[in-house]
Length: 438
Image 1 (spheres, rainbow, N blue to C red):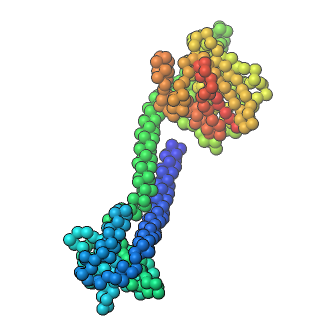
Image 2: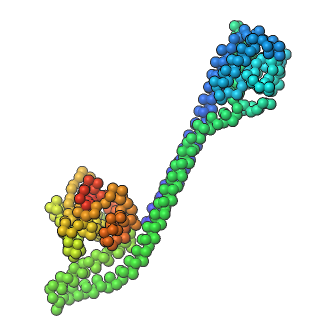
Image 3: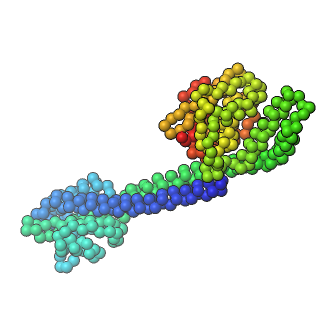
């Protein structure tokens, strides 16, 4: 059963990891496409805006040669392009191109350096998208292209005269590295989030595996020890049974004492069997009507000596009536309730009561086992059921314990489709609430 649970956890982890990878891949592709489309849309909008801002007559007045360098039209247009570059840090260059004698040439290049393209300089590397802008009069976006100045992502918009004829085109270049960074910085966010999630999942899984190994080691040790203890206990139990079957010559007081010892020996044997067998699943437990009052009366009688030793008293509240019956496995429920009541007796203050009471809710039979002891801190209320854990207060009390008792109780109650938890509203000691389905 432990191996099956481990396999279920491993499968769940694999499924979660696969789903995260698939979800991350789909989201990344979606965001990559959106980011690319946004840059294309924004770059086209930019070149179209600048193209509309350019004075058409100023372009018509240019000669398209180095003689333009000193003209006011050229200087004004170049300053305009440089201003647009300055306010759009993603854009490296903006330029205006014309056509003459079947060649594409520069009217103006925004580059202020010595490497700038001069007016009239033929651009032999003109792309198909640039020619389409001239021929169709429609704006174009171009993927990665390379020329003597670098590798670019470019967009082009037509500049037309009053008759609607294309007289020039305006282009803008974005460095490929800038484009790639912009796209990936948005698209890879889910990847980073998923990596962080998977790292956290790995550490949680690692911690769970380490805790489980520790619990399994302790359980194995208990199993070995229980095997060694069970054999002599069974022999003692048989001897006591034989003596009680033939009580002739044994004083009545001793018979009562032997009966109590026999019941406790039988109880210890049953507990050891439960440890060796761990806790059953629902389909492994008996489905029978269990009268609760006799069950708690048996527990109280069995723990009578322990109660006297700890100066405590077990009180079965009148809310637990003779008619109260639950559906389940009596032996396993006896073990679970015994463990909780025994803990309550061990940790309650001297001369106080351990009270067992009952409340019926819409869905559950609810049993309260309350003491007036050391209590359990809020941060320990879940840990006490995890196995291999004792609170600092329990250790300091000097009471013996393994930290496994409540772990087995929780497994038994869970096998009955119920639950056990510490009442967070109880302030005078500890109140364990066990809920079993109606």
